[in-house]
Length: 105
Image 1 (cartoon, rainbow, N blue to C red):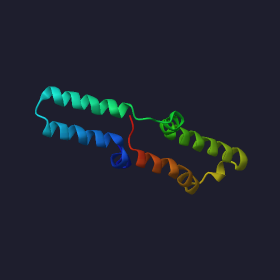
Image 2: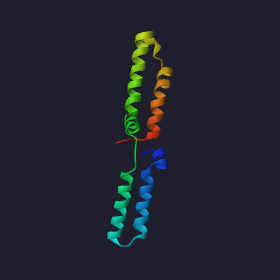
Image 3: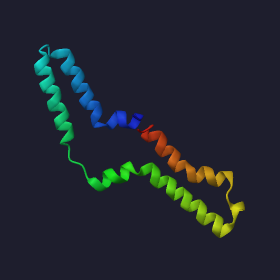
Image 4: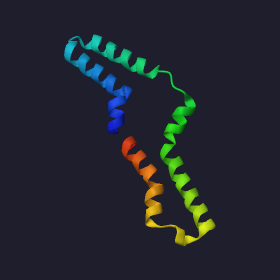
């Protein structure tokens, strides 16, 4: 998980809840019941499907956009137009996104 996800992710709150249950509840059956309720509540969180899809495709979309940009630049201006500075500038957005998002699965 990335550092941004660790700060704002709902999983972090669920994990803290699980830790509290482990520390405070001595009855194993009651602890299992409470943990199941936590997980069910997390699964019932409403989401917007298009936003989830865009989020899941973030890295791939940025990679395809870079490829499209390089393809357009080479066909329009030739291979001499692709400089290290241009590559760094274009690839910077995807690199920053990857650093913020984390490793992934």
